Length: 612
Image (cartoon, rainbow, N blue to C red; front, top):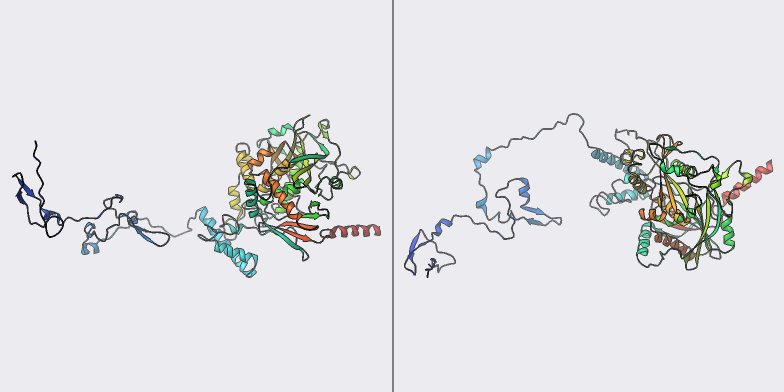
């Protein structure tokens, strides 16, 4: 059996730990062998640093700025936290390097950094140049707003952006009225589509942002407004005729574009609800209690995406029947261009001296392109394939035609049962047949490429606002064949409201296909000659899903407007969008509103006939 030697433990009655000894000693153990007594004096001068098991081991010595940063940091609330490497710094002076004062005074670092000369113009990155230009624009706008005086809308807008600076309530980069904030100098001050008169009484105000959220919640759960599709859809009357689509336009590419022709022998009609004789007869027969056109109905269904101001007239009869109308000579029927873009067309004289890129001129150009495109893609020479319906075009008068003929459009009057005793009668439009001897119908629309003119330099030598727009745009002639999806995604961002409205019109008309053409100017400065670069077929329901347009939300929106008007008494109302805020206002107006101009024109015609 092996012997186990007990280690020597020196007694220390005075305190804890081993006693203080001067040197090594030997003491006999219980076994009779001599054991060396440990000399504790050699550990007296050894420095000791406290440590924790959770401490992170770092470098043995780190005198760099990054290493010093580990010693402590200050949080956002002002509290100071010591790092693991800084623990015990005040107590462990032995571990710190000690420098002689005389040696430290004679020590000097050598500067090896490269010196930069400030001679000449300092180089600025494009981002820095844009920020500098934005700062100058803000200063100019601030001076203009101060001249307008306090309390104005511009002054309130400026204060809101100052409050929404970095770290403010508006979020990083400024709150303001648009997400992204910092580019509030690009904001366009629009004018109302119609001036509010003193005898108009505001009865309702709707916030489009809250309205969008409420419709989304109603679609997700059973809300106060039903999001169900119409329980029954009935075709009442068919009018007009349709030509067959020309399949040759499916092969159009940017390398072989087709010039867009002007259709000068076709008549297009944009008749409002109360001027439609077919809707008038259907109202007399009691086919429904809500009457409108597809342009007005789709506009209301997708109004939450609108940006430009607009207005509609609603007439409520004593029987409770509603007629949704538009004003005569209004801009309602003109298409918009880049309405929902980050930098919409402003029509400033600096960037567009000829005035071809103003919102009004662009709207007229887009409307003409759309009308010409819908007729050019059809087979018009061979009338044997033309399909005529029960009644001719109700708005065409052969006696006053003067060599003109109606465009290839079929008016499909449909009745939608929305429940709760709401029967909506709508006039929808179809533009052609997809194939010969088939019942497949199509609608056609045209997207036109908007390319701002190259900007001219401002007085301070900095580029104008249009430079950023040109940098972010995609050239259709270069990308339409290889990256058509990217082109369409850009158009969905810049023309979200217009595309949603077209999709809603196709769904209301019951079209099987929706044809979209991509049309561009032959030269950027020529607003009269265009070329068709490509065409694409889409199924309306699939395209609605692609652009995040919920069909249930569309019907919930129109139900909400109908219920809103049903609780008000009979009379005439004007529903208009605020030009600079996402608000809808409903005004009660006198019965003779918007009818004085017609009366004056009739009197003038009578006077002229009397003079003759």
